[in-house]
Length: 192
Ligand SMILES: [Zn+2]
Image: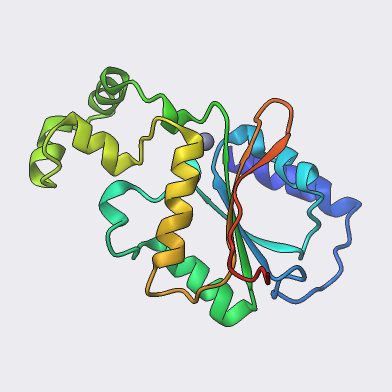
């Protein structure tokens, strides 16, 4: 697998010559989305994003798991802080997607998969004080409704003490068609 990647890269380098550009995103935008493999390439195409346009942050479910929401202090917030304070980002788009894996986790399949890979779910639940399998699901970031999740994440980010109050909008993208729907338009920055 590593060799295959190296070979593919050598092939790529044969006919690509990238221009050197700065690391501050031209559109002053940070985009938070999911790690779903179906978003690869399709996502940038659907938003007509070019190299250098925006900062992209991907987490499982484009979400902040429930235990980390209280003080809005996790790796996503840290990355956004870097993008805002150091890279000139002035607006954030949180983009969940339909048919997200985190919206239909089967707890039985989850714990069976952990056991098959040598991790004891009950031991983890006990040691990390997760309570029960539902707590394990909350730690993983499971949610029921992608629209509600996007609105909740947007709220957490707007209220984070680590971030300035810049516009933070919420969207859902259709994983099959690429159609983008606005679900939460931030009123900050809109003058009456
Ligand atoms: Zn997803």
